[in-house]
Image (cartoon, rainbow, N blue to C red; front, side, top):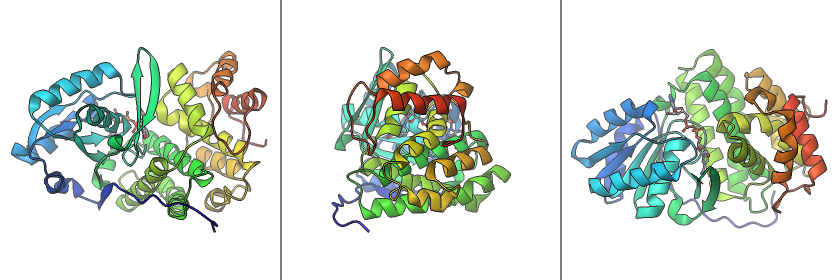
Length: 354
Ligand code: NAD
């Protein structure tokens, strides 16, 4: 029970279900557009082409060059193609990389965005855009960045490989974990976070056994929507800061980095706000929130150590120094020594508290 809060409302329209890709035309027209550009990664170009064919004259072109971390040189090419096509909106079909490109086009051109997420990373509900220029990643928040409409189609997630299913789910849970102690949290977001954790805890093991299990896919995508909403409407803290440090300065893979750090950042903050993190222990067991998430990560084959993704022990001092350079809100005060200890445990992959 929260004694006081502000609920800002949820502004993005959401269409959820199986086969909902058939509703793209209706949703685009609802926003008042008659020409769209379809975006994807090179890997998902076939899906983008099928979508464009199904849209007929509504599709003014395809840009299938989205890559991780939204490099500005890719965005500039995409903006050129968008302007040349006569489109006034983008349809972003894919994971966070494609959604990021759609946001980068929108913020430069005023285009509306219809996003069809195919991973659990959770960019689609947020007003956050991270972009890379000259090897440096910067992040900003603005209302112009937030997509107008999100179409969740369970069928498009059936092809998500098991390893990405697992790490992407851990990435999503990280948004929910930090939302539970966000100073600007509200009861709607907290309820969504609790429900998401229960849905992932049950759904991910079922997807490991059978990645085509449509009911489990539905559960996981529902959980991803909840977690993306949490990321999009409240503030993040230490966990996202550390993930940004490793992704930005050590070029580690996005979802894996979140997955590895999650039990450690949770355990770190649990000492300051154990009650707020109790929903994690309720969902995952393990006697503590950090321990429960580590047990879950291990049981679903999620990577457990920074060592496993190529970080050297000698890099940890530099990572800790970058992480504490600028002050930011976190439930437990941050100092170089305690962050260095957290990183040591994450590098070794030890169960928190062991
Ligand atoms: P991604 O979008 O790069 O996708 C990874 C790979 O999987 C790509 O090749 C993609 O084409 C493929 N793929 C995606 N869905 C698939 C499916 N259903 N079947 C088969 N292959 C599929 O990875 P991601 O983890 O979704 O996104 C990571 C990026 O998103 C990072 O750049 C991160 O910074 C960003 N992100 C941003 C926010 C935000 O709010 N701004 C939030 C989360 C993530």
